[in-house]
Amino acid sequence: MDQLPTEFKAFRVECIWLKQCHFTFEQMFESDQHTAQLLHDTAPLFFNDLNHILIEYIFLQVCKITDPATAGKRSNVTLPYLNQKLEQHHLFTNEIKEYSDEILRYRSLVQTARNRLVSHLDMESVLAAESLGLHQPEDVVNFVECLQKYCDAVGRNIGVGPLDFSHPGCSGDVLDLIQKLKFAKQNC
Image 1 (spheres, rainbow, N blue to C red):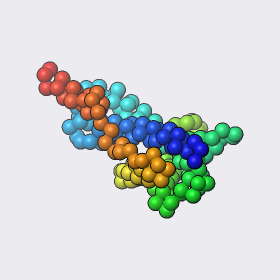
Image 2 (cartoon, rainbow, N blue to C red):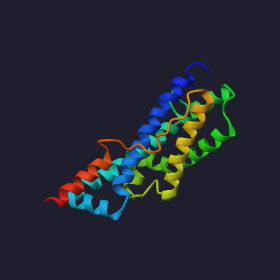
Image 3 (cartoon, rainbow, N blue to C red):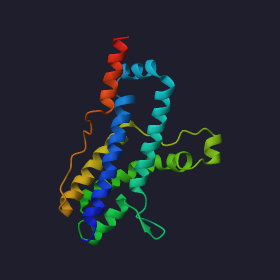
């Protein structure tokens, strides 16, 4: 299986990072009204900017891990690349295909925003002040779940095993930041 386990592990590291970024965004900007008010009361411009930065960065990361298998003569550590390698080794199952298709479906929802406003500044899109990349909350939930399931299925098929990254919180994360802000607000 040549480099497939090593290549897959590199891909999974990127998926874990993407999940961590999404978790941070979700906890800060989609958790509850109390957190939203706390962030607004603390530093409204900063947290508004951070909201936009995280959205753009997550769109960029989604597209990076789902970009084509190659760019010119260089291979990319991406889902299409892994799928090609899995097919070559007869390890590409219907289960993996289903998760892959759902991941790529989400990419299709955010790719135009990435191409026209995040990676480049398309003149027409900028001047029209278009909102690109709009999708439903359940679309991103499904994407994140399928990303975990894809990584687990591939990990099992190539002998690396699954790795649960569905709950990435740890000491010093966004939850600690929110707790510190709540504490500071109560004690001012």
